[in-house]
Amino acid sequence: MGRDWFADAVLYEIYPQSFADANADGVGDLHGVIARLDHIASLGVNLIWFNPCFASPFADAGYDVADYLAIAPRYGTNDDMVALVAAAKERGIRVMLDLVAGHTSIEHAWFQRELNADGPDPDGDRYIWCEELPDRAWTRDIPGTPAWVRSPGRRKGYYLKNFYDEQPALNFGWVRRPGDESWRDAVDAPGPRRNRQALRDILAFWLDRGVAGFRVDMAFSLVKDEQLDEGLAQTVELWREIREWLNTAYPDAVLIPEGSEPRTGGPFAFDADFFLVIHEAHSSLFDNHYAGLLPFHEPGEPFFAAEGQGTTRTFLDAWDTARLADPDRLIVMSTADHDFNRLCCGPRTAEQLGAALTFLFTWGSVPCLYYGDEIGMRYLPDLPDVEGSICNPAYNRSGCRTPMQWDAGPNAGFSTAGASQLYLPVDPSPERPTVAAQDTDTSSTLHLVRELIALRRAVPALGTRAGTRVISEGYPFAYVRGESHLIVVNPRREPATLVAPEAAGATALLSSGVSVTEDGLVVAGFGYGILAGEPARVRG
Image (cartoon, rainbow, N blue to C red; front, top):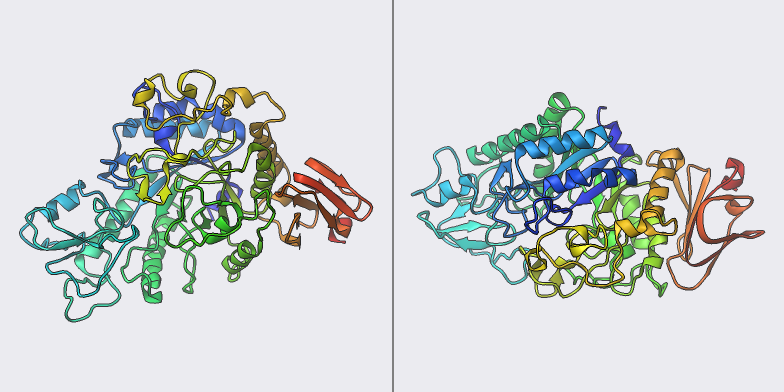
């Protein structure tokens, strides 16, 4: 298949508002990214994932799209995106965009047309409307807020939202269609059909301009009643139709979902599952919930914590389940993302990052590096609500969206604008990490990230195509890749001992605090290592 390249991808997620500001307005832009492409290339990554760059009123940081076919003016123009794609390609890097498929902004022309009409669109409504509130009391993602919003325009009644009031849900039809709710369209009604075609048109528009694919926000929330198995199956079938079209029209293009693709039988529509930081399996490893808990999160002890009270079992069970039907299924694992706290958060310090990064780049997933995590940027608590970043009082996303820290200059080199103009405040700590300070420091987090990615590329056993065999689930966590390489990480403060024949005679390719003993390894607190040995020895 033309998408085989994705198995060797290393992603780099950019929150464009906060990466690099080239025009001194305090907000990041595409020319800023172009100017920093050499840094991105120096990491060894080969795929950039941009959070939404499309025209938007930014009620939800761009996840409320007003025009899918236009770059937001704050970032530049469509031509600037084309230039960025070309400049990245010169460095061996592809570009993937974020597609918000389930809703738009209230300012989108589609919504404004229906909002200001006297009744249903004769061509089929693109949104979900009802004149009287349904009997069922529905709530959406923001606790306590109603799912239905009273129409502020000529159109009578209410529209269904997906998240904020400013994000009306697009109409892809319903599974259940009770007789007393005639406003529910079938999945093949004119409105849903128009939206399916629009998805193809949007994908084609940007693929024709050189992008490599899309990460799809809320990918499995399109056909409503998605909480029912039938709803998920209908949505997956919708994406399978798009995949069949892509296979012919754009065979190299990748589609990555937010979360895991439901297993409904038949071929996969998406090229991987995505264990985001809001995914329970990922949260059980890394999240200390310092940004707050989402309604579907349960507090717990993360495995990568100094106290050493966590477990890898939740993660391993989810990994096995995801690959049960297809052992070769690709899974993306991220250091962090735009919705949750970074690796370096709360009490977790830079010295603890080595074990976490070693795991993420050697486990066998497709790794995703969130901008700034390559230098150990901190999650900053108690920041202001900017563009919907605080979606409920207990959950603040601003702290993981702060400006990239490039150097020791004003605003950490992010922008020459005044500090009060910045999208979000820069980390005020005089000890904040920067790219410039770590660039030539062989003991830095940046140097480790470059080493790990280079080693992953040089050693096929560390990539996605080799098998993984766990030999210790606790502290230390240890596993064999490709029956030739042993990886060991100890994210707790106390030393840990591994007794295993796989370690006999092994040679460290990259390590910190790892000592080979007669019958295994001793791993210092926060230690990590990638070791090679003769295949027979590693198999034991």
